[in-house]
Length: 410
Image 1 (cartoon, one colour):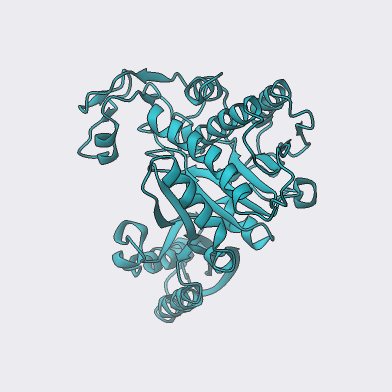
Image 2: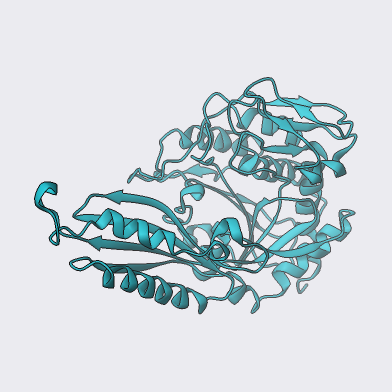
């Protein structure tokens, strides 16, 4: 059988970086290169309905091996990699029998130090996979894909193991927030789902941030700078004044744990009109309205001090915490915890300081929990994953299939 590690080493060499600024679906056609390979591999495993659709989604079905009335579950991972670091020409390196020390990559002076990556301390004796320092690795989320594929292969080879119908879903464009934009849930036909896109072994998440996006536009008055006294209202300076008023403890770099934040990530404009693009995040959904009101208050102060300057604030809902849905279906997380215990792990339930496809899927009617894939140092040249964690993830998925069957009515 092909191990998850062997699959990962094959998948990461395919450039699947998504593009935030593209309006197509998928945002990059190269994501379909991996999709086509996965469809071929699924066909080889006997999942003959495997198909890549026009939007870059891969659908497949692992048939049930029991007559029990088992809910249909879905295993989901995303094919794209983050645009935040170079993603083309990935050259994976396997560091065999890791000794617990510093790992030095051959390019760009990249060093993985357990002092900065403490989860490495749990990996002594395992193989650690990195890129060579010039690119990200792409374990986010190709490790999840490799683990799902390895679990499918094992279950196909062991038809004596009872499990219900399992739907396989590989999505494009998760990293740019469009991973669920064109999912056909009727075609998928699942009742509950698991994204395999988490970090440390044994972790699962049933809670995410709630999220809004906001665009604050300052509109000023432009005129010839030589004759601008008491006439010009500079929108760029208004934006600068607003940004200077944002408190450190209201920012991503000043928050942790259950704290929310407001994050300006792009400024563009001129004297006459300048836009500031924000993301707003909190584990408490009502906080998002408070954050928007605070931005309005700050912008009002800025404009009051600069005659002729005005502003508008547009707020758009992005996603809501999946916990609001998953609290109604506690068995989804509980079955994952049971599977992890049976795989020899101590489950650790937590929350994500971000979002996943599971956030949107849950509100679309498919309650979805996120489980670990072993990914670390996401979106960077420091990204790594261990062979041991990948094998634990495969084992967890295999146990998870059986837990659902055993807990269902005969």
